[in-house]
Picture (cartoon, rainbow, N blue to C red):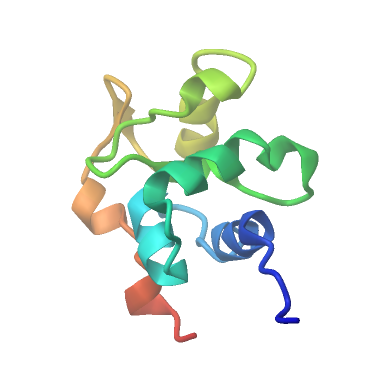
Length: 111
């Protein structure tokens, strides 16, 4: 019987590789891991990431740089503060210079 993948752990492994001061997207992670449910599955994984050590979930944003997961951080400004602490500017819940800050695992990593 083939080994079953642990999709959430695979997502967390990728998120742990996102460098400080950079962000990635749900979709970029999904494409890299070839996840069938795509960005939505990455979102589900990120919702549960607080139960796993050292998963910098604040570095995962939506496809245009919006802090779409900010409500899962225990306060409306915590995600923004964590990013700003790493040098990422955020205005109106969106990463400033998103294209320059974007870390795409498909370009940065090899399987």
